[in-house]
Length: 359
Image (cartoon, rainbow, N blue to C red; front, side, top):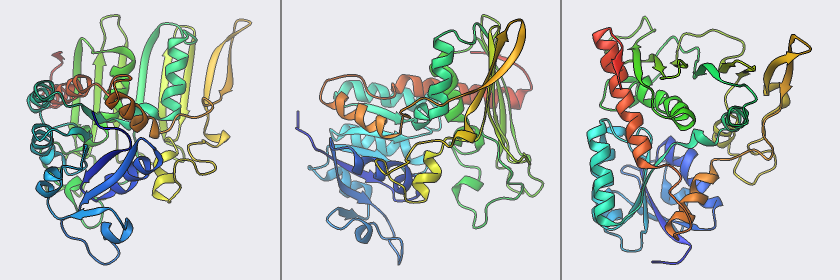
């Protein structure tokens, strides 16, 4: 076993790498950013200039062949995840795969078997397990503050009735593409993290945009039916014109929790705020959720403060560092991530066939 700091190589230099991985890697002392793959650097977008002293490669093969690289982080498009992760594992590297894990559950479970055979760690970057509002809600559920949960709604809705200018892979039908893979994987993962796998699934995956000529599935609604009668609704919409977008609405027999607005970390990271900076991860008070319970026989609403100190996405890499040193499990069990992909496949099949399916 090597000793920390462990050298990390990042394959890909798009938004995922720049916003969600590299800033976190640089903030965790267990790791050292050693290399980046960027196929075509250009003026104003050059990993070598952005990170002097870090090796800059043009191909993934070069990075994987670098004996100094101990951990490979795959941040490329979903249709490339399987081959890159497979090659890295078989070359003796630990591997982090950006979500969605792989386009198919068969590929995901095959990677898990390769991980076991090679003795290398494999995990998937489901960073929204460390959204402050999700952690707050998890505490409310686990402490039985809400009682038995009857309905759980989780939303990632936006008002984007026109496709993004410039296109890109997130606007074209590709393996592992579409809203259900892109955003739905976060929301389904959160539900399964709390409640486990459902008994049945009903899916609706399609488009809400009028200007959609290529069949890209820009929206989805997935109903997860549980054996105890609970219904979880996962919803990603692009036609949702609201002053405040609903994030969570959870109803239990003892209380309800409602939350608007997304976790602040993504916007902060995009704006250049880094882990450790003042205010990082701290949600403004007017974005806190509300908790409604019975007080003296009447429904009574109060502000439910977000957990303090807030969790941050750096937790993923901190846990990964511990796992490499034999001090715990990987931050996201790859079997959990593979089961999320299986639910996505079933959700799309349900949508295509117009029926509810057993899980």
